[in-house]
Length: 267
Image: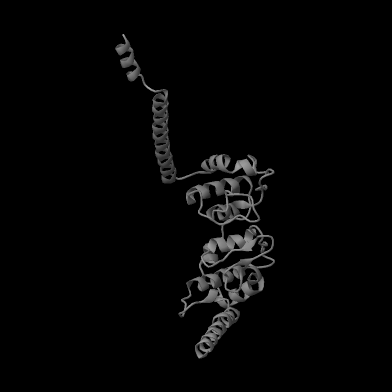
């Protein structure tokens, strides 16, 4: 009898083993579910991208991704402004540069990788334009880079350089805000920024800059983007101030170091 009891006690499973088996089962089930969901999501995204999206598709995308902040009727909420009058040009700019959807509240929406495909963005833009019309896309010749580069450079210096820098390298503003660099900005987004005035940028209407003026500015910036550096370090292309600072810090520093070294050797 005692031997039979001992055999039974030795064959009894620990409660921890049952808990471990249940936990392992839950983890495996969760992993399989997550993998399957991701596969289905990727398939849905590819299917959507493969089809031509309509204004109705844009409405669905807007309702699912934008209405939380901007409202179902686009009149805005406490978390986002009204979209009445912004137009498709502003929507395309904000979403293609990744500024929208907003990552987090802050002094300025940072540029990042876009969350949607270009076709999805255009569908949302078309829906906003149909419901709350505003600035639209320009004619192709405005973006062709064939304007007066010299006049565009002068207009940029007078109207834009105080924030974006003469070399279009960007610059700091007040309260954590900044003017972004324009060294890789597309012609469409240059035009959209001038017309819609995103964030801290003023709106340049036809009374300030005509479409031909905007074309000249875009042409000057595109020319600057495509220009070939002669050689060496550009030092940010900021002009003689940066070169002088470089010589002052490293040139004078090298002379002081050599002087200290000669003095130490002579002693």
